[in-house]
Image (cartoon, rainbow, N blue to C red; front, side):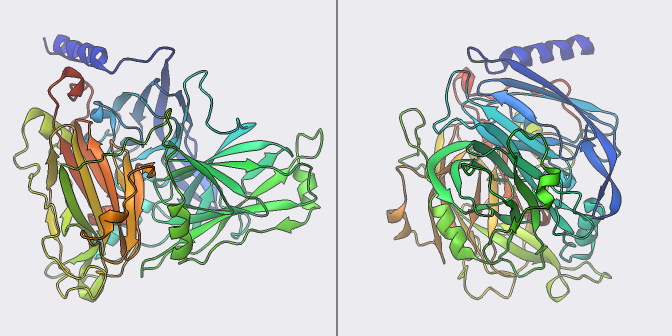
Length: 574
């Protein structure tokens, strides 16, 4: 009887999934989570991988396709996979954050993620979403337009994923476990990587260098992803200008940039126009951090090579050695002026084909402070955080504690929320102060599991404000299940009487991850049109671990196509 019920539940779930659009197909993948020995910087380490690959395999789809991925866990660690930027319309069970939409996949178990990519095209990515597992578990998602639909920019000759990551010579899980135990900041990474390779600027790494081999007079589409754990990055290619055409799988009004700024969790598509004839030179492509906080960070530079192929050549290895070498000039590590200017150029196309459906009226307004704080040290323990405390982070002074007895979405769907979460997350900061001025003496946070509940289709405006507690810092905030419009941003404290007058409600950029500027604020608007429970958190992994995270509950609407679908029968249990 139980087996037949499970079969019926699985069948009903499959039949209830959003219909595939005309001409769409189902793409099937299998992810075997296994350990693999990988050598970088002359040291070999066992890392967790998908199918033994680092970075992991590419997911290819077209807008409207269904993607089915069976994930089998062969390692001792618990695992989940998040499909970063995929909206998961009514299919929140497959979003992936541990203890938010699902319990982890345990050793020897499997889970099938099954979702449709609706109304999206561009570059996204997948990564683990439990503890710091995403340090090595990540890969690109390439969503092509529907067949026969062109790009709104010149068709590229070739498309290449460029994935930035961070490499640790020791296990990142041990690093964050030690930091949470002692209350100190975690040890920093040993290198940044381009497509898993640190590049020639590190010791013992010349052979581990990504080479982009190009032909002259061609246009290449670089699909850039920042999968680094804890660092925003500047990226440039020597003697070449890039044309930005897409961010977070949203087309933008094209603009040229010698240097791209990209935060963790963000993607950026750029056009690279190669020189008309083969230059007698090799060009370095390089990335290094944009850092704003007072803590220590990895200030090294990862690099790859842009190599022009000579006529009728299939390999350029011998050719590279005899050519002059050009390096790009990157901004200073704390160049907020460049970052502000760059992000200010991002605008949605706002065309008839690709409209910017910005909510023009707002039903619910929220004002969230985001930043660091502290927790008191336990008795009989010595802590290494500020003044003998433990580092913490919060939203509106709530340091979000993940449940362990059930995932938030399960509790919501079955109406068993008591003891799992509370619904009184504050709309505004509970302790107002001069957020970008002198911080208060009491920096302790409140540890709790609180959510915001929204009726279906509520139009929302959210202002996120950086604070100076433990030092002002930029925070890239990622919102699961939604895209949002960045209608305003500024430095200092947000002024509700003046700043809304400057909001852009015509062609603001649409994103899933936005940087709250150091010592400043950002305003976003979105329509709560996706029922479920949706995580929002800083994509600096250390801040997420410290509690800079929260969740939104969006209730079902009245119509059948406005309701969360039933859970799959193989959903992991806590």
